[in-house]
Image (cartoon, rainbow over all chains, first blue to last red):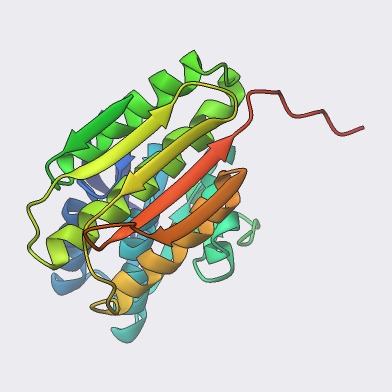
Length: 117
Length: 132
């Protein structure tokens, strides 16, 4: 399955739902969408990776790039990750120490008492 | 099994699929195939990115040996250089971390001839012993 992207609004946050495979072929599409959202004025951004089946280092680079762009603009940036296979990718690369990871959209949008991982 | 492909990102997925099929033939258990898929994708993605950065159209070569241990070699023809920007730098670092973390054995070497580099990865078919 290739990449699909959709946005919705949850508790004053823009949630970008990512599904499919984020790899060297599809990551540029994700980068373009993140840039577009930030340039359009989005300042509270949550990336929902709940339906991502595959994530490689190119995708990780794009996510870290998105975090930096969002913070430079004074915005917030969080990732929703539930799958163990994806969490392993963040742990091996130590990017779980850099990117704010949340188990649910509620936690990422501040609607529950769960903090980041 | 040898696979040569044009250095285009779209073909990395095909290389992943072939790599997993050969891993299955080599006797790797199902629970290891996700890490094989990711590692082969990383090695091939790295090779494609290196070729594209230098406008090289030479093919990327993937060699897979369906024996025990399962050995995969990915050869590119690009010279070494620094990452282009912050995002590329993160990608290069994350890629090496993933390759080291996923392959049982990993070597990144200079290619013997024609320039470029070789990523050599291996996995034994024996299932991992469960932690007690």
